[in-house]
Length: 212
Image (cartoon, rainbow, N blue to C red; front, side):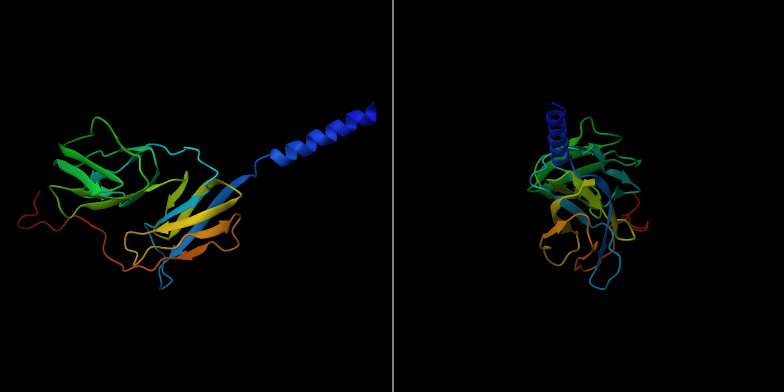
């Protein structure tokens, strides 16, 4: 009887070990340009077709000092995004991108309802009043999305150890970046995007026609 109980216990223990999820861990991925320089505002998506969980939180794309902030956002498909206007002047935010066509006509403060980004793809944002205002929303399928900081680092906090399709995107890239198959933990976490660098859109200096 004791032997039978021990056998059952061993079988149960083995079963639990087999189904226990692999531990998630912090992860940093570094993105550089073709010159090896850190690349800010690059989107990193780790896509696991078997993981369809929705984990994204509501996001904001603010208008401040006649500039969209942040310049690049990354959200999971289905995420509601608010567009608070923190300027004293009104804005008219819009997009004609196939992934999300919308329009927030002249407004101040915060619109009554967020915009839900319900189709994967790249959404270019503009302001119908201030043509120099530009920004981008990357709408990904994965809950594991990050945008690189000024040091070119994308930080993830809880990505399970598994195999993924690594997808990269940057608004200045010269061509689409071919997705790569990767397995966590990564032995090398440096990746490259070939870009033609530009200046980020910003409010022009005050002068004739630019005082609003």
